[in-house]
Length: 315
Image (cartoon, rainbow, N blue to C red; front, side):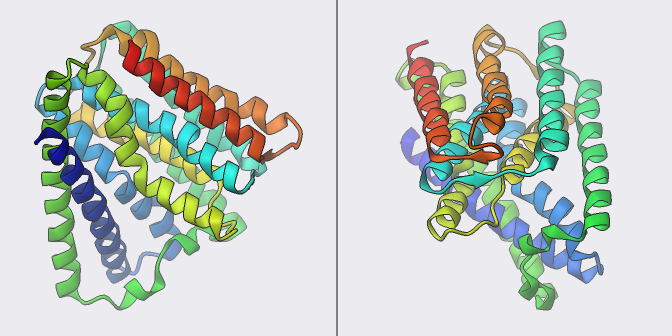
């Protein structure tokens, strides 16, 4: 029954997230917001909604390990699983913005998260606000860059949504909200049940099963794009997802409900895996072939992720 709850929960999260993205974009068009702004802000926040709802539901239910593990595991999966597999299928180019902007912002947020947990064993409302502030500044710089260079993010926005009726927008919002609410609730309940049944910690379940589940949309989109030899997906998109996971998901969750550290392993093990996966991207960019995440680099990332999963279940 618990496994069934997890599966149904993940399905509802994917459906709910998709409908929330579509309704949010369509609603933004109604207010005459430009496609560039929609792509950089509305889409980015809406696609983080499954992780946000899971982390918030877990924090409100007293399962802080799931709140932290969901984000830490998702960030690890985005690099090790999603980027690794995608690069194995088709090598991925990088641009100068990655090293000069996206990667440093991700490392700053990662460092802030570690510092907050290390010093106070929790992430308070004030610290959550600090994480969210970094996201606001990050988006401001992105918008300024996009305005100067041209709106690259328009490709992320479906132009057909401009013609969506008000009734459809409301219906999609309701479906999205219901999917995210029940999906997050059942996923957390199922994960806790599995942890208790198999005597595995909630922390392990969250950094593995839940994290992989909430990363499925990114994985599917990335693999399909790679198989079609499409170059629309960039390393910046995946790093952006990691930035939003820490800044908006942990930030907003902590503002609503402070996140307390329950398992020391989150601080002594899991977060160092996240830091390691984030750090290794920089040298990989400069190892020949430069500025390309080639197939052999993808293999390295994927094997490292498999090692992380195996060691997580042994801890």
